[in-house]
Image (cartoon, rainbow, N blue to C red):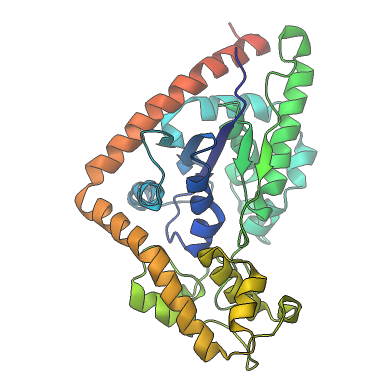
Length: 339
């Protein structure tokens, strides 16, 4: 079976409130990889249910993520857009990899500790083991590259460990080098966008304050209001990038401007250094509206008027994804000894 050399896999959870961090840290990067890689972009609905989801909202959010992919510029004819639950290889391979992964590896996963909180005994088994499902997502396609944020690097390292152990464990039956060790792609100056209300915390779908994030459904007025209310300090912007140290709110807004404009932080500081936030924030709001409004408008059009198109994209994508994953999983079955 021929190995891919340039295959990208990544996904976004359909848990509502897609925001600027999802766009700058993930979706925009997905778009940029289209010309250089074979891309599979997944709506990871199986990951979403590691915590309880309202079924109607899950279905709506799945369409919303798919619409965001398309509106942002991913071409569903050239690349594969699908939802995870429609391709059986994800769940089936995850079980085999659960038997390869070690409990000690999962115990080191910091995101479980963060998401489970103090009462871990009440967390779902899925929340604990979902890094193994993430490994299966990637390895089901023998993907070679995964665009990830800094907070996902640990999970990709686990996927590499699982792939290596599988290859070693089943070397005698053809496992040697069967799974490539996927490489991380960490891209862009704002891969980690912080909360508008607290520059020390990551922008999050789950933050109780809607003013902490700019969502991909916000109109121009909402974007301007949220940026105007964003956390800063009384001092003007510094004259150098080094002057942003210890000023989390200012650093976050400069980073967002840099990412949206394609400039470096140093270039943003050269343009606005010494000016008050009363000048900088309106400029940032104008830029954000310019970049996000076309995506927001197209998402709204599809979700309001063309849901059948979204569903058709997901169905076609699932067929194409399954055509790649099914023979890979079939070979895994042979290697493991299933008859």
